[in-house]
Image (cartoon, rainbow, N blue to C red; front, side):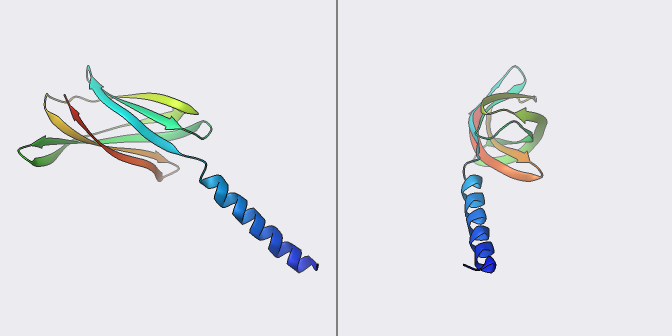
Amino acid sequence: MSARHFVYILSFVLIGISVLAVGCVSTNVEDVGYRDGNVSISITSSSGAADAYIQVTVYKVKDLRQEEVAVFGKPVTLVPGENLITIPGQMTPGQYKLCIYVIQNSERRAAVIRDIWV
């Protein structure tokens, strides 16, 4: 086998390993709640410790309509396993939709919408 063929094969192997490794890292938003002026979010991470920014966009739901009423956010450090994040933010009693974004390295890693009652 020539050196040129060896380089091609090695390149394909390294690309394949990189693609498989990327699929193994995930961040998932689990439970969401509100209590005493704080939004609590359970986030599960399968990667090593990483800095992230959690953004919560709050929509009030009333009469089959929704209106954006607030945006809360907080920088955090996620550790492997379950992370409980608490973000201060006032909401009045009612029905809400929360759009939760986990941002790492200027990229959105996770995004979910959760319905809650306050």
